[in-house]
Length: 614
Image (cartoon, rainbow, N blue to C red; front, side, top):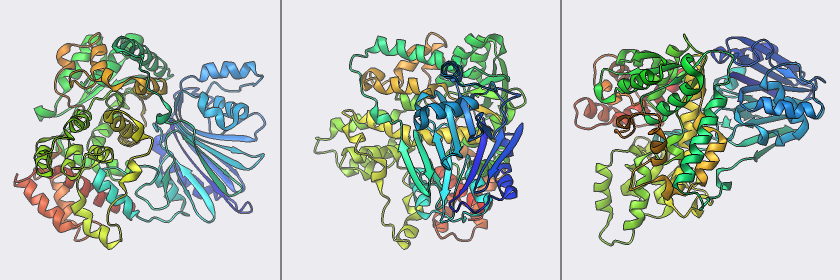
């Protein structure tokens, strides 16, 4: 895993500045402390930072083919590169290294833009073709690896991290007000937009071509193209999932450096750990975070899995002071305000892991693929009661008040219960009041919810399928971004076997009634886990790397002090109502209302503005 960056001036007579390109690259040295490189040819420059995992001695980048006409910078891992290399050798290609990077170069020469369809892995890469002066960029199917870009009147800029694009100096630092409002409404920014104006994210499953000052973006893989297979019953689903998961884990254990797993003690990471340990034997390390607050502490279950499979277990007990000390760095690493409080927790875990391993496997993705969240059950319930005349908006408000999942708190605003509303119900956090006046002042009466609801989603017979797809396109991308940014901040590569595209395609082909049994979420994964894990671990209440934010904010020290200082040192902000936020802080610390979510998003936003000077 690495970090990439580059510049392509639209005027071919203009030369890329070596010092500025080096600064662009070195702003994320932590992504690749083992090696660095530059390629500059007039108006184009490519930069790379390397974390050595495969081809330790021969993987220097930027890398060229044997004609030195095709240059690549690559971030990620290609798990089927050995098979692809054999195929290409049969076609006459000669290799000079043992790295997966070189395989991509020759795959591009053989198949052109279609090369991405041959790759199984996580990737973000750019290839410059000296013959036609074109730049080709691609991102993996599910967005495991980040890739950002910006285009101005004079040039095109790209990088693994937004901060590198800003560092080069040609792209102005400007806040994207509409994205700010999305952040407070949905706790994330959907689609290609970021919190910075004119800085975009290349969407998962897309590639991009810049040639002759023209830009083309192509969607090469789409979740909506995966048809439901009505022939898949419970037995076939279990057999298919277990087989694919075992293989996904096996190929992700490919490494020339020590590796381990992040094991929270929840089902998903514990199942990954169990299967990985069975393959790797006694060389497996496991890492978990514990808390003194017992309601949030799952470390006993992580230790139980470690004992069962004989792993070398490492545990960190995280307190409020340590959490607060990592918060600013976490926001800096994320490039944007943190969507999740456990981002800090993952950074702490990664810092623990880096003293023992360079690669970890994690359990992200199972909930979104296999209907693991309780909220997936609500749309079907609402569909059933749609025609009942006495289910009115006031009753929906009562229902919303007793639902703990923050994504369902918007329930009462969608009393029409149509499909669009049900999808919004899944996403909304309902912090509109804090940004309402600023939205109106900037001429934005309401956010365009339609960007979250595509025509393709409306074709699903089951609303829970729509919600699952929406989560995979938005919420899961944010989770994967969090995992990448925090782990790479500690120079650790995180691999996500549940997001192997073969498993993703199979999971989305399974009819939703097969995934849910009598309102029991994620039933297929639980049944598979019974072969590997104790039943009391599998069927207990879900937590999964939760953080006691609400309690810590009430304290005088640690996170509580940080929150108070930020809120009261900031006199005003043009985008949020500071009096409204401070009032909610007082209600929270006096235990009149749990305002932890509003306080978390507000403080993150304010700290982000300070860190990035926007």
